[in-house]
Length: 313
Image (cartoon, rainbow, N blue to C red):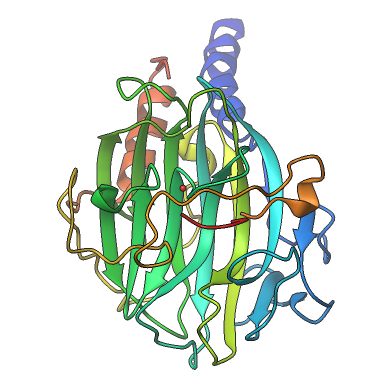
């Protein structure tokens, strides 16, 4: 009996260790207290609301009007931000869901909704998700030839993301991997994910070209940061009819629209860094749940596995 008890304990401990997100910004607190700070022009631009058509209780409703410029920089925005130790050598999984309102504007220019911005004061971020026209894009290194994934823009439906990143300025060390709507959308892609001597921090909301006049509304829910895939695997299946990914060729994609102001590549800015509030900013694969199940089965068998040019953006 003692032997059986020890075996049970040894197989349970690794599973217990998996369930340990290092940070949650899922808005289940009912406010913005989970986040380091915010950039908004008024309280009605970043609202924690009852989550529409979602299992979670709360979501962040982000509204941007033409002229919203809380930090006196280029573009219009309302965003929350969080410092999550994205430093050289760190490795994390991030899970979140985003829903674009049914009337989310279609514009042939950039509209960022999630980004990991460098701690420097100028240039595009090393990792950013944005909308251009009727597609969503993921761009790396602040370079137009590093658009590594895209998918059709879908409105009025939750879109689920799991992003796996090794943060490093070394292209041989850093990488990204993306699961989208429970499918492997971008296999592991080697890339520098930090700029030399800098860290990154997360910004979420809506940041867009100031030329867009229509009101933009987007919802975010369920953000978690963790150290293993099993910590962020969705616990319930997504609704049928989720949009499939439309992978872009990895490495170079000169035809993909830029998330930066058109025609101003490499422009420099001089926003101060002293106050964080002043800092602005593929191929498809197997199911993420299948990978999680395999990992869990392996653990139960007793095996151990080692496991962003824009001004003031």
